[in-house]
Image 1 (cartoon, helix red, strand yellow):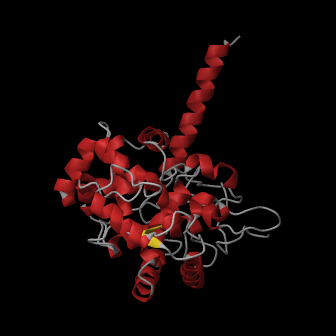
Image 2 (spheres, rainbow, N blue to C red):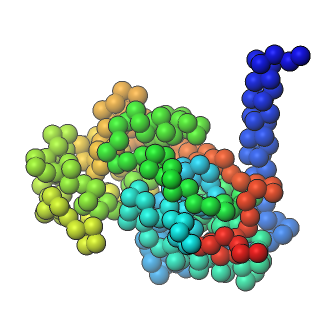
Amino acid sequence: MPTTTHLFLVLAISVLLHAYSAKCELQLNYYAKSCPDAEDVIKKEVVKLYNEHGNTAVSWVRNLFHDCVVQSCDASLLLESINGVQSEQESDRSFGMRNFKYVNTIKAAVERRCPSTVSCADIVALSARDGIVMLGGPRAEMKTGRRDATESHLNVVDELIPNHNDSTSSVLSRFQSIGLETEEIVALLGAHSVGRVHCKNLVQRLYPSADPTLDPDYAEYLKGRCPTPNPDPAEVLYSRNDRETPMIIDNYYYKNLLSHKGLLLVDQQLASDPRTSPYVQKFAGDNGYFHDQFARAVLKLSENSPLTGDQGEIRKDCRFVNSD
């Protein structure tokens, strides 16, 4: 008669093997036979959209983060609210996200070439890969073969996506739980070198008095961008993450942290926490090394618990699960 311990070990090994085999099903050039032009079509659309709307590239990077950190890289983020089921886009953690309509543009182009073949989850991953390059960052060799979720994960979004005011310990714990190491986490947060932050998420560091960890001159600049402690979320009141190179993924983010010009509290704490500060200093001094670690972190994030094989589905429209 098997003991309880024996049964537990068998079950644990089975779960680990299943997770490992699912992860291994991702591969480079997954669509080489089923849709050989898939990656070229996606890249062409990403470049076209970037030339028309440069901020789309930032959206593709943020989409990858918000999709993959919530349970799985499964395009659940793209599902819209329908029949009483709410979208992950309605979470406070998704505040300020935009350009979802242009994901549909990319998907439509792929569908014209290869109907019902390329997943929305792979479009999220590949558009992020190409968007990072458009923003001057490194190319990450994304594997493909993901499938799409058939349900929203809104119920766990708030607990799985770190808040801009979370402690370093909380942020490290969350990302370590999906396999990222401390150096990779610090590198991944380097994505904050592009884009912007709405004043709604900044005013806690400015009012009623400025956070003493902020450079005083920078605090005054931010008060000029955010002149009220109660900004209207519907108004476009924001500050760029990085004033020097606002649309380039580079190590100015870390240089700013060392100068006490971190925009969000979660950013600034990286420079003072002994677990993360050595990496901040290393990245600030070597942009090439930062790019190497950023690419490594993005790849690891993109491979978080993907749906593969016969799991999930290939959505025809990224906004809705298939009806048939």
